[in-house]
Amino acid sequence: MVVATLILILSTALLLFYLQAICQKILRRRAHQEFYHSIVNANRLEFPFVRSAIEDYDAPLDYSRFRMQLKCDFLALTYLLKNAANSSQKLSADEKLLILNFRVLFFFLGVFHLVGIGEKVFMLKLTSILQYFGNVLGERVSKIRFGNMTASEYLLSL
Image 1 (cartoon, rainbow, N blue to C red):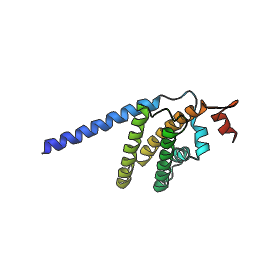
Image 2: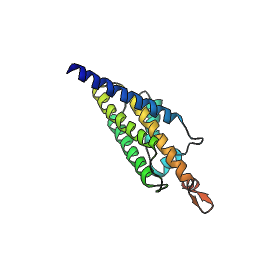
Image 3: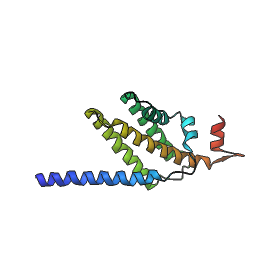
Image 4: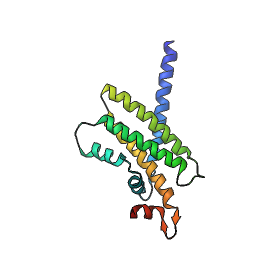
């Protein structure tokens, strides 16, 4: 019984390790432009402000507010990725893996908050995933044209 439990724990840890490694490799592939600014402005997303608050200030985190902002941004971005910009385009395998990774990290954020360690690291990883989603969505939207303007030019003019 002890051996089976140990094998289960080790297998789960290896699965999470490989998931994290694959997602880090996906996140390193950056777009040539940062498209997420127009998406953040158009949808009033909060993750850039959460990231700057964590990186720039050494004050204690407002855990419940930041957690709710990240969750709301995640829900908004995944909804937009699934349903907007190009409705005929489905989520890629990379995007599905990042969604799974976000949910796992979000769960561990709550666990580590209860223990009282490592919240900032998890929040920074979550914001990097949201930034990737914003870039993907912004790149898709920028390809849509309205007359002489692209969608991103239109959003920036607002």
